[in-house]
Image (cartoon, rainbow, N blue to C red; front, side):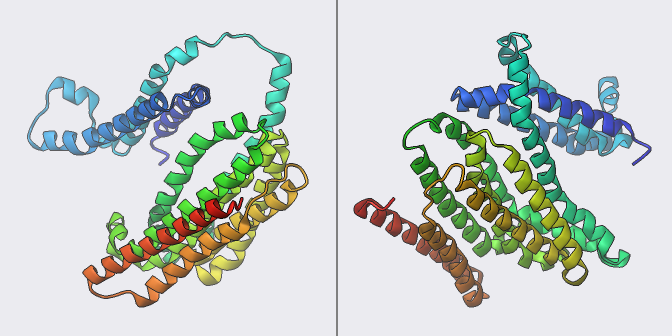
Length: 380
């Protein structure tokens, strides 16, 4: 939209404010203050949603009713359109910044060159890894446009993007997990039983994300309501692949603990660039023949390959005793139960709902039985 360069300006200021809040939020996590952290995050979200509702629902309705007070017209211009989305982001980010002022005022502005060098050495590879992660997440939508025939490209991207939203249930859990567990990694890393704790966390993580994978898939007939255009439902078969890809992205995050606590973050950059190359290569190869399914399989193989690479390299630097037998059991149980449900699904909605709940209940019984056996037999 070249006629609206102000959109870029609004986004730039928003990103600047969000960047300023990164360290105060990290400090709240480090200080074990989850309630303040969560409350400020919720205020941010509430203001953002509230302003969107104000600009896109209330204001147009007031205009229809002939309301044109001077105050109202100074803050709302119907021709600005989607620009109010960016305004909502900016206002919510600004208020978040204001709420974090106590954390800012506690900072003493002293430049420590030695510390700066350590931070650059530690953080620069993570920056490169972060950029590669963005490539992994975004390049498939871009390549779909360029590699598919122009007559169908936009439609295919729309279907893929809409169905990708269903996997947000997995993404949200992983994001929340990262917020909570990252300080734990660093505070526990110096303890004698740290590696056992990290291995246990991985097992629990896979058990829970496998449950999310199973739950989202067996209740897909209800969750597809989030995709309001029925014509996009044709792409729902890609959801299991995307959920599994995000699950492995979370597994990779757990595996990445070794290079973070040892300060060898350059390996994170290596793995991320490796994954980005896989993503780009497989998208180029698979999209022409498989469309968005090729993109989904490329994402899955990318994160799986990064998991394998991180584990095998990490064994030589910070070996963690992961119990892959139980991890594989949880994951294979969820996948197997999903396929049982898929091939036995009913046309009747009630019967289908009962079978979905039953399948999830069976998985929970499997996990509980395994964990109980582990405790009674002292299996690590």
